[in-house]
Length: 199
Image 1: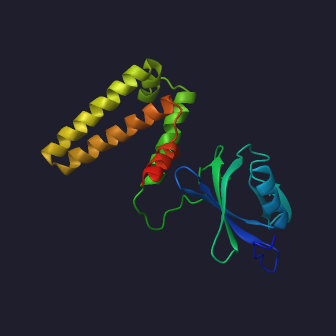
Image 2 (image 1 turned 90 degrees about the horizontal axis):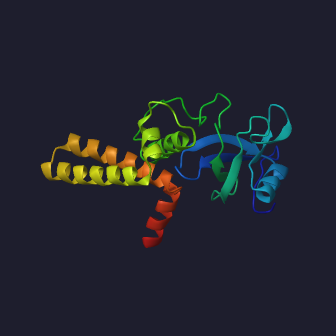
């Protein structure tokens, strides 16, 4: 493991990040074996300092972290895992361990990622009275029609020049586009990759 610089305890800090939204999920530690197993298996493994043992994330809860990318910081003493998280990353049941606000900032991509998860959950687990469930039940024709309507309404709001209306219509459009993507089984990350390739 010459590429990594372990500390005096034989550990490095490891940060898990949602590979689609960029949301930071948790921070833990890895020893050499945990790092090796993560690379070999494609699932996150860590070293528990409190229990003094190796553990595979989700081995008991089922909340596995499938590793989509592994990155080292410039000093090579910290590992960033970009993961596909199953269920909650935090033992409290929260999706991310970082749910205690000290100073809030704009939600940005994290909010879109969270909304995507909610939309996909409604697709996979229909709920009575849910508008999202209703759209999926009606199918792609209804979803596409609504996305088109919201795009037109956004254009009209832009022409009107009222900030509140533009923001509201844009939010409506984002939501319906996410429903459209989920119906086609397309991830936000697929769209981001396309944008990056065009750039």
